[in-house]
Image (cartoon, rainbow, N blue to C red):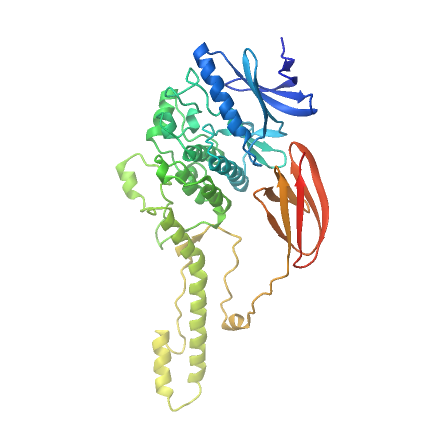
Length: 473
């Protein structure tokens, strides 16, 4: 018979099946709120059931403390004779698993945004001492608004039994970290590895580890490095090879030190640049390509020793190029002045000619200036500012732009809200605390998936400071 009630909740319909149980759409009659209820069957022995109950409630209690826009909100937890359940906010959207299975090809910007939002939620959980342990596409919800939510914090830890791996570890083999497979103690870096595996699948259309059986997949997780994403999808930026390799390093010490660091690289993937020596192929990012033979490995150019060295090289390319160009332009101006002075006879005519000839290093009548070789640099940000003009007059006539006065809009939202200004998404508050806006009228809307949106029109003057304080209840 179909389930009609679960605790105090009225079951409205079935949303889907999972490996552990069924997810229902339900109504909470006490406050007339629609919720999603995830159930877990208690088909365990008495000893396992007692251990599970303690662990289940402890984890649900921990997850209930997490108040972040990228983490699903847990309302309640309970148990019947045969089922344990968690009531959580009802989300309008699709799981990442459903999106990937539909065959849609996500653009790189969308992929980076989804992964970065997941990283934001994980960073908050890790700061509060909670490790998810089962990050995978079915546990990532993409709402119709574009907001991303991590689910299943309440059942991240399960008891020893048939659902576990290595005796006391639960997870999805294709996305598990090596330390989880080996049954070792884990921390937030295990979630970073799993997010790297999810990012790999979004970029290439297939998970990084797959095989004929469970043992084959587990062996790959522990021992094999998957091929670089660009070897399977040439259209993506080389920066993704670096981000995936960094997140999925076998040794946790070689991974991103925090989920926030990974989120920062994801949001700036188009700013990455790599050095390309003339006549050679681009140097790969660290650990970006898996090789299977010693010959293949020896043919690869040496990668950067670590993340710090890579960032220094990237900054040199991004910021060193314009500085070098300005130096060349300044030298060109000096040479032009010297050339003009040569046309006027002076007592020091011979000395000036010798000086100009020495500076030019070529025929004084037509000095040959050193030129940057464009093939030496590969830039991955097509929308970067154009290089400075190559005429000396344009350099001398440039005047610094005067910054327009801006207004500041401060935000204090409880528990959280997705902030839109004039229809454009600005972020989630908290952590977003302040927005700089041009003077004038602005339509501000703050959304929370559980409550009605809050909307307000504000009029800001130059250099004004205004604070919006709102509590959803």
